[in-house]
Image 1 (cartoon, rainbow, N blue to C red):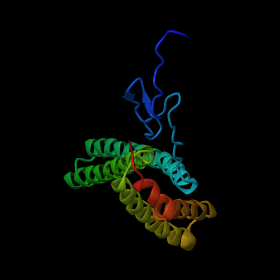
Image 2: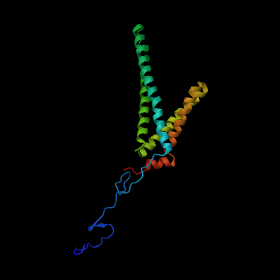
Image 3: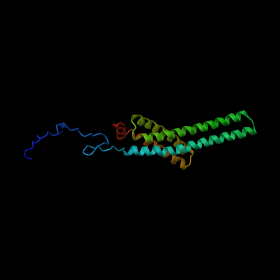
Image 4: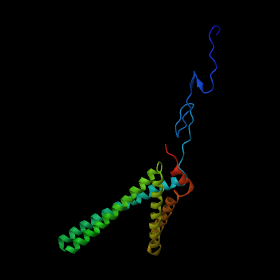
Length: 191
């Protein structure tokens, strides 16, 4: 290199007179030579509550469809009965019962949709999902206790077991967002 002008040494952080950019250390992003932050994972109790929400939605869907089917059946029986014996009171009462059964079925399907929506939103949801899950789980636990009281009083063993499962699922769904790890999960920064 004799006869060539020598480059002056550059200061650290500068290349050819221009400052280098600092690597971006964003959540879940990185590039070769850049900093990569580890992805956060959902706490185990929240994962369990999420699975329970999906499991709870299955009997809610089945019950909703069964209530709607029975309501349609009652409506058909009422129509057949009033064609044989044309009594206005029988027709009104039968259709009122059918409407009530269909309404109960639609409410059950609505709760199933809420269960699925909450379970899906656990990954990215914030405080609204957390509060809704706590309220939903508490109401489910209360309904489970009511079923448990009636099942213990006069129901078969299968009804008692079903009510105990319902109470257990409700307690886990209620408690998971309230423990420290659950609260931290829903309060974490999202990018």
